Amino acid sequence: MTRRLTQVGVAFLVIYGLLFFRLEIVQVLNANNLRDHPQNSREITLVFDKPRGSIRTADGEIVAQTVAVSSKQKRLRQYPYGPLYSHVGGFISAENGGSGLERTHNTFLAGEDLGVRIQDNRDLFIDRARTGQIEISIRHDIQLITRAAMAGHVGAAVVIDPASGSVLGLWSGPGFDPNHLSSHDLTAATTDYGVLLSDPEQPLLNRAEFQGREMGSLFTIVTAAAAIEQKLSGFVVPPSQAVTPVDDSSVITHTDGVCGGNVASLMLTGCFPGWAILGEEIGRPTLNDVSQRLGLSGTGPIRLQGSPKGVSQVARLDVSASHAAIGTGLEATPLQVAHLFATVANGGSRMQPRVVEKVLAHDGKVLQEFDPKVLRQSISKETAAELRELLAQNVSHGTAQDLSISGMEVGGMVASQFLDNHVWAVVIAPVTLPEVVVAVLLEHDSFDDHQTAGANVAAITRRITEAVLRLSSSNVGGS
Image (spheres, rainbow, N blue to C red):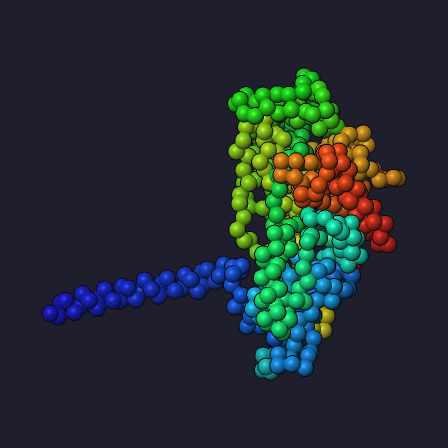
């Protein structure tokens, strides 16, 4: 009997040990994943009506603040510019948690970060509310420009400083008014949130960072980089209007007649059959290697520094070399596209995209500064320079002439994807000494043909670029 009791006791001890070990894994090792999970609203709910720091732009505009009110909650979170920063700043809600910087940087804003909570020796002995303020890299003037250019369109636009990785403007449309979700009228806030969730246009979705679309011909800048590295930039593709890949997959055609030639010619004409033949010459392993180095495949999509990882698919070039060379099936977000061309603009050096510049104390003292972060040297400076020259030629007398800006040499590309009904445009300006990269995605616009679609997205991208470069600051990335 004693032996049996001993065995039962040992069994219970083992079970208790396993349960304790599991609890430690859940609470300690997985703490960050649980805190950042999109469905976990507890962290935000607990601090909804507590003191909370402000979020402001690089040029000093307050985009989120907490004000005193004469109600039971005493404090209300307000967003002075409504939808303008809805996908950057996000929202905080008693019922529905939060999004954007309100969620990812909650510990700073709510004063839960140790560096924010203890700012001098007195804070060790006095219990008082300390909150952190956040300064973002986005400039208010650039954000207004981007929204105005994208008015009435579904899609996204990203303006980025290639040298630092700082995002200067980020617009995703349609947007939403975060003031409705932060309301003390919880019934109304819940109703509004439900309407936004059920809207087929997905206004809560930050398309710039989380909406992937097929790159199409934009990917040929990667194929061109691989060709340059393989000493194939002078490789001449015989004139053709269509080509059947060696694996007998779908025929690749050029709708504007026969095309061919070297890399420069293929870029200027948008010659898909030529790129496909060049892709077979380069080989899929090399294309995949360059694509991975540039951050397009092999890992999850590039995110803003501090952004939640979420559920993201790893992009892979699983198609034939012919189709891989023209970007078939490879999706990218507008942030990824801006990041890719910013790498080319920055001499092949990949910078971590970021939107948070500083965390400040209540009195404006800088508590933490987020410096530019180099991810890797993806391609050589020489290769990047050749790619910029190709992009400049493409704007001056190629398929991207609608992107040209009077009095300035710029480089860029335009791509139309009619199967998925979206169009891309991206600009590096100026192309010789790049200050800014602008990437624009328009979704399911009703255009009669690809020329009209391309002209429309190019006009929007050009307007943003021209307006940004006309700003008073000589250095666009400065505040």
